[in-house]
Image (cartoon, rainbow, N blue to C red):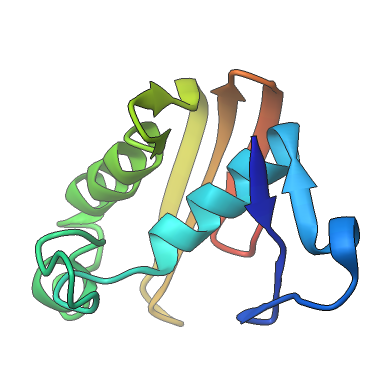
Length: 124
């Protein structure tokens, strides 16, 4: 699997094969890209994406922590290339909401078809 490298939100061009990621790094980039796509943002499929505005923002806190964690987890688990599922399992998921800073954190170990990667809301 090859996936175009994205740095600071910008797809990379002009450096031939250095512009592409392979293996577990490619899956990590695909997951990060999927988590940054919000519902109603992509014209070709308005239902695809993480429902940030309708299910997460303003509905956070410890009361909804499990629901938000489930939304993110499902988005990761559904990462595919055509019909090939790239993620086989997700373990050690830890999420937390700090009421003082209103910051939600998420970490999980993702088993991919290429190996294990760690995903956090700080990046891979």
